[in-house]
Image (cartoon, rainbow, N blue to C red):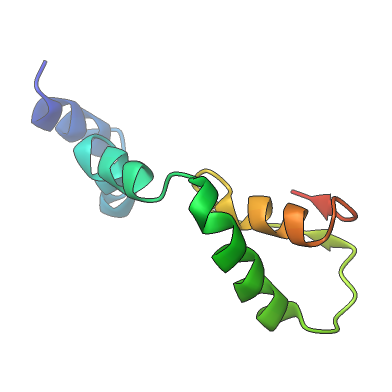
Length: 85
């Protein structure tokens, strides 16, 4: 079955166009572009240090996290001292 016919079948099941876009090559390409690589750790931690500043953080919930890169950066920045969801 072709990718287009699989997407059309999912669309007929009532899934939104936005959700259907994440199936197949589009979603795969996005995940590949945003995969974790070691060189991303320091820039990610620095970005969240600027965002968080002096705020005390007890827990973090990330919605729509793909592979959870933000949680990886926060976990490292906060020395595993918060609950991550």
